[in-house]
Image 1 (cartoon, rainbow, N blue to C red):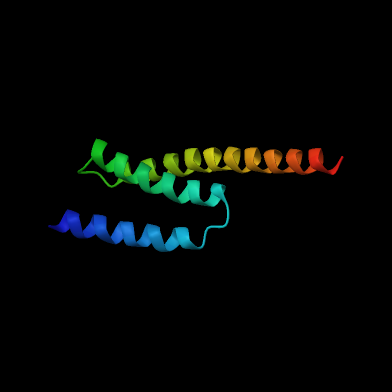
Image 2: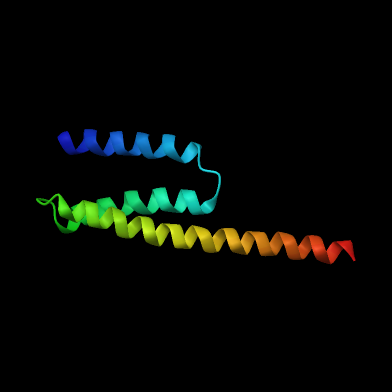
Length: 86
């Protein structure tokens, strides 16, 4: 029961945080940190270090994935706009 409450609170917090995210980079960081923390807990359930390391690694990976998505969207829009202006 305690784990269900923790998971529900985490999901509510993540949802509230994602509402304010303006870019894929921000969203990727938050989602990656959450997923990494869950993965860290699954790997080391009786240690506080597992979720912390997992959250850090997940945030870094999510940030990079989101940054690449933002760059692709920017270049796609910029190229299309440039192409139609000529």
